[in-house]
Image (cartoon, rainbow, N blue to C red; front, side):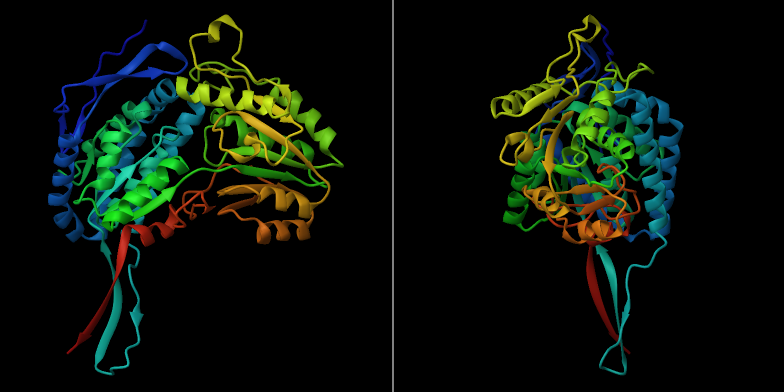
Length: 486
């Protein structure tokens, strides 16, 4: 058994502090359940109260700084994270399971996001509006919200926290951050970068702990004016209801059941590569991952054979092994969820074409591995066609027209991302117009959005706000209208 005995502390008011509970828990390597990568705090309400008080005290002075001054701090954080890129990425792989190249890419994205929002400190924050009073001047500016609670999932332990915290900070808010316990060690390394950059005490705080304690505490806390959350739709609704009850602003990014449509005229090789990348990279643990593959009947069999050939060649293993294409599920509970959906798919009559079980090779027995899985004969009412699995499972569905494909693609409660493969401009435009999703992509995989572009979903995938890019200012600030008369 390999043990990393380092214990990671909460970060509150510019200091590293143990929880008043005196309790910690280990964070496990999903590629080897016998390896503990570090220990994290099991915090309680008193720790959260301390963090919220520190953030509240710091928020006024931080908000009074110029945007350019706040941006300088974010540039320093970006530089610190860039210096430690390999270290953070390796920890991410050990703690969450994604491959090292994917982890490096995500960490580099965190650096780019920080630099992007550092530049936002120099952009305009308002407009001059004509007044009916010829002697008056009327304009708008933006006011920070105060203290923002940030609750993030385990699947992107660098990118998602950074794309929430960076805009919150540049627009003048202070932050109380609760990472997922499954990846709290990686989160602590990111917080060390903020500390190394010399962020003023209390401006950014991290408290690790269970969602039922710290997450719920953020939802209910009177000193936290806004909550930004990414996670499941079930928990997201609880966040929204709790925030609404006390009048806090909230932003929810939740689940997806993302389709790819393969039209009769599609480049099948391109479509297959994108389906595999979009659906199976990161072990399918992306909110934008391809889950349903809707294929025109004319090319269905050809597409299926090309897909199976590629899927069957995928190599499973530790993300730190350079020959690994797909790592493990992030936890035992996530593995159990994926295996449960696979069994339900079989019971409901879907045809299992490949995968569908834990691998039998001896070197993978200590990890939370599941084979990449493809189902045929999937109908719209099946659970694997309706519910978010968050694992490497593809559901093939056959259609006879583009109209049928779009109607089927829309026939779920989610609306996060979708893609189509076609050479026909009319089909592209119909898809763009008719698809009920916040992100639509043509001849590209469903997963992924550039950091400067707005990101968010429709229907039950989102609270209908948008993250990233300049759209982030809409959530993290309030418009203040000013009238001045001499």
